Length: 134
Image (cartoon, rainbow, N blue to C red; front, side, top):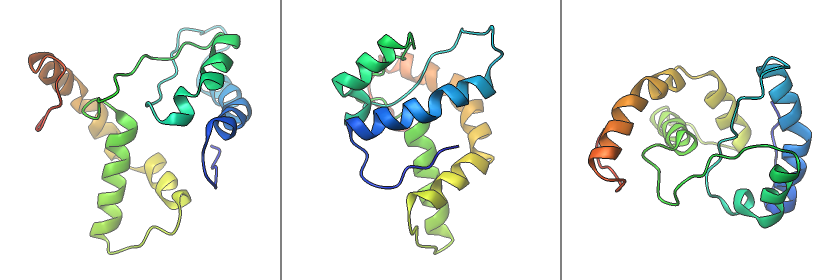
């Protein structure tokens, strides 16, 4: 894992993905498996035109993500859970490093994955509108 400290902007994001993504993909997937898609939200560094050009130049498919999709966004959902977990422990988050470590190690990830079928069905029933309950 790579932890970035500082303000994330487009150029910093490109540097981060250049340094971390190839190594992550190499470790996560078989060398012959190129059937994967990068998922990211619509944060400005992710939609920065040079970030998108970097993905295209490196033949990396990026999942198109609706602007208002927190119901199905694993990143936002897990971040909310981590913040809630820290708040419930009356613990101050000093920096993003502690949240990142918790995000990587929490069983909440599996609970979120298990909830996706229900979330997708609800999203279809709501015709893509924001959901209030899963």
